[in-house]
Image: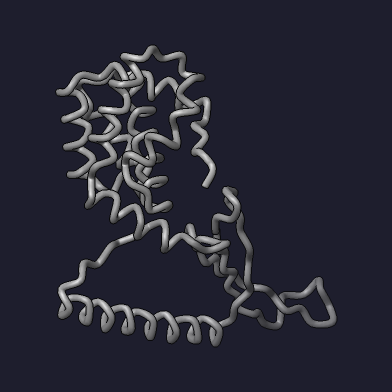
Length: 219
């Protein structure tokens, strides 16, 4: 497999990690372990960055995002921490780090990436997201559409109740949307399918609990 190319925007964060002392790395590792939701929530990542007291405030967000990106890379490729460090080595030349800094960076990254529970959560999210389109949000806008008779200058003779379902989704790194017109019957059909899906979700979760398997939340 090809080496992992570090994006240029991540290099400043790696430089900060290279210069971090043991206490700073310990704090970052502890917060990552305590807040695995940083893997799925930008707000959680922002909150974690704000709690870093031993990393320069102007770099805290970048350090958090770089750590999450590397954790995702490790989980999705099934590689050991040693292999990950080897993969990113060619990109470190662009960071203009000296031998001692590179050694320190590898030591610190080894600690950051050696988080089995966080990596497992990242792997679960990666597997769940292995789809060409990922749901983001939905909204239903309801409206009345008047029906006029032969004379449009006169009041409508009736109306049609319509519902416009908007679904936002992510595809190829872009946020997209599409719209579907629904009537009352369509809404009831969707409601029935969603209710059935929720019942199946409940049944499968109960099965996992009986088998003692961990349930990974991906959103």
